[in-house]
Length: 258
Ligand SMILES: NC(=O)c1ccc[n+]([C@@H]2O[C@H](COP(=O)([O-])OP(=O)(O)OC[C@H]3O[C@@H](n4cnc5c(N)ncnc54)[C@H](OP(=O)(O)O)[C@@H]3O)[C@@H](O)[C@H]2O)c1
Image 1: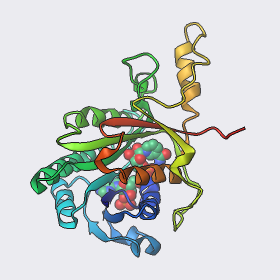
Image 2 (image 1 turned 180 degrees about the horizontal axis):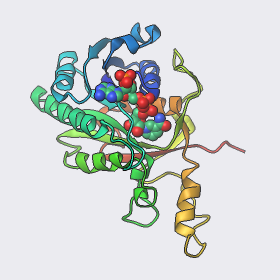
Image 3 (image 1 turned 45 degrees about the vertical axis):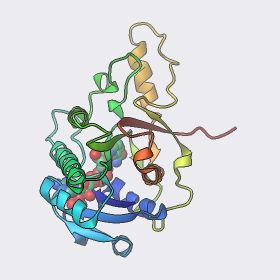
């Protein structure tokens, strides 16, 4: 599949380039400055488009010109709390979604497949219908984006998925080329809309049990960047048939056998 990638010079995006290439995708990057791309990455790209992630028209033009079937948005980092300076993420998120919806409709074919990097606390908490964000009020812009994306039908407008990772840690810095073979989606367990492999071990403690349970659980949802990049690249091979279309997706490292 031909994939338009935003955020290619960042932590997540720089690992996505080799992972997408390992899965035989063609990668078109949409970056503010091509000079920030390492030369190893540049030689493997199908095209480089320079522009700002808030410019919906430019993103749409890139999708149509390069005939991309999928988009991954890993651009900008959400502000940690509502007291931190706001990021451009909500603007970029909205611009990417609008561009991808319009490009799909203008092309007259099926909707585009689109992954958005999001936050762990967008997943459902143990007491429905609460989000984990009701207990862990960090990165509030991700919640704003989740509300925004729900106006688009995953079947007819945009086959979106939200990647709801907790802290992502690198196996290799800088990003390794080629994609490291040990970094595979097989190392992860995933679930739609809830954190996978949740434990209710601490829940029974009076008064603070639910909150303590969430805090203890959340710390177990770190995952290697390269494994998550592999997960996304592998999923794009499924196209519109992916089980994650229209879902928030939680991930956890699989426990080691034995
Ligand atoms: N890293 C984690 O542990 C983690 C965990 C969970 C979720 N996430 C989510 O994953 C996403 C990416 O995180 P990250 O750690 O990779 O962030 P990062 O390292 O700060 O990278 C951000 C990327 O966004 C690009 N960017 C920023 N503003 C832009 C704009 N206006 N137009 C186009 N590109 C722009 C940057 O490009 P320049 O080089 O031009 O600055 C850079 O490539 C975020 O949504 C984050 O919340 C990250």
